[in-house]
View (cartoon, each protein chain N blue to C red):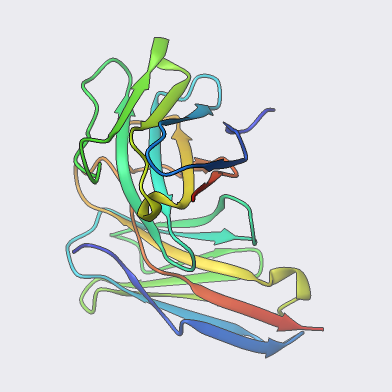
Length: 111
Length: 115
C-alpha cells in the first residue's frame, strides 16, 4: 500500500512546546502534503512539499522530506491550545489520481 | 468564497436501505474526490472525477457503491442496500487542478450510521 503512516499515533504536550510528527511511506512520490482535522470537521490543507524539496516553512510549521528514507516530519513550534487536532500526511505519486492518507497523529496541546 | 458543501451532515438509515450523499464542490474546481473515514482511522479513497474524463472508480469497495457527477459540478455518492460496515464519515474534496499536484479542499463530511 502507498498509505503513509504517522508516528506517534497520539501526542500530548504543554502549550508553548514544540510538536514533532513523523510520516513514513512506501512508494515513490511526486509530493507529500500535511493536513489538519479538527473533531467533526473536514481536513484542512497545511503545506505541500514536492519530491525535489527538502524543507519548507509556513508560519509556525516546518516540514522536512527525506526521499531516500521515504519519510517526512511536521514540526509545529510554540504550540497553542488551538493546535489541538489530528494531523495527516498524504502522498501523491506521479500520474496518481488520488492522495493516500495515513491514519493520523492526534495532537493535544494542554493550556 | 464558499467552500465544499456536503449534505446531509448526518444520516441514519436502516440496514438494507439505499442512501444518497451530495457534494457541491468549489465553483471552477475540475477535480472531485470522495473518501471514506471510519472512526479513528485515516481516509480511504473511493472515487475521483476529473472534468469530462471517465472517473477513477478503483477505490469503490463493492458494486453497491456508485457515484455520479452531473455537469462537471455537483456529485452524488449512492450506497445501495446499506450494511452496518458502511457506517463512516464520507468526505468530499475538490481541487482546481488535475491529479494530486495541488491541495484538496474538503467538505465537513456526511456522517452515515447504518442501524
